[in-house]
Length: 371
Image (cartoon, rainbow, N blue to C red; front, side, top):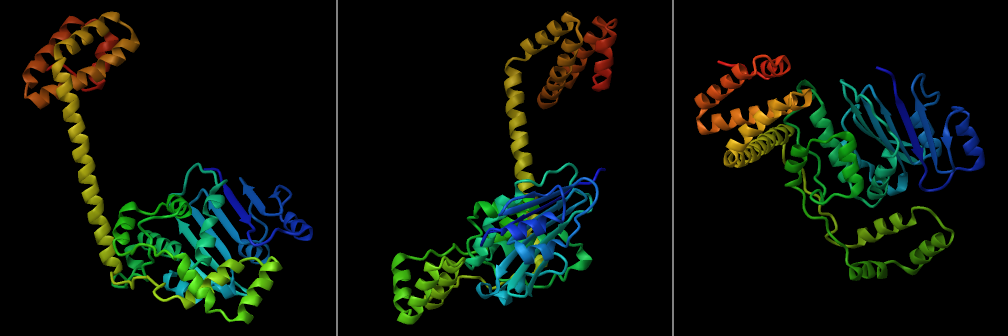
């Protein structure tokens, strides 16, 4: 299998300077570079720098994909805007990590698949995931919980403490943003596990304009003037900092459910949910099959006439069309408990067209031999 590695970095808070772009360009002559993005793609060879160091120094987000089964998403946050202690409740060794480096908090989410991804393309993935950074800056930790769900489903049973409780369940899991949906698709989170987990998630609370106004009035004049001055200077992420300050002044904003289910309970419930879903699919498939058979029963005579007409054409294409039609007629005979009648008619076809080697071969391959 040929190798494929894709690295994409993006800035959000500020564009790269000319000097920074020149420094990044030294890592590869083939880099696709702009003031807000850097993309490195490798079919052979490897990235010459350290992706995490590059993120810390220049960028706010990174997405990495390799076709042997590695997927990684990283975000850089200003330290003062992030509740590190709260985020660390969702960490799992080697899969979800939160670290403080210099003036930043780094979130790393990884996925390892032993079988690899086969043929893949990484382009466009980070753009669909970039909104997750803003959600976390707004105090929305659904990404962390979804990443934790993926992690417990990916680990081997001997790597898990099945009696460990789930971390806090954030509100709003029942109605996900497009960025969260993109994360679920990219990291292939099990739909049944997500459905089970969602049952403990409250609706995401909304903040009324009156509540915001009431909180703003609690700011003293000096604090209000400081925020206005920083706004006039065009400071990045100021809206998140102000939102965090206002939420501290509003009662009832925390609507996070304390984790009460064990990992074992979640995984077992997800397994039951999958079985229930499989049964529904089987029932739906069977109901469709019955409807098709009953429709065929209304034109059974015409169907046998179609078989004769196709054989009479004597072409490879017509013989190919005979086989699926006969298989449907056999299913109909089984459904109507008329297997003997079908066997008789099939035997007649074998005898009548015994010299049609192409037809005979196709019938034998489809297990439509005469008995």
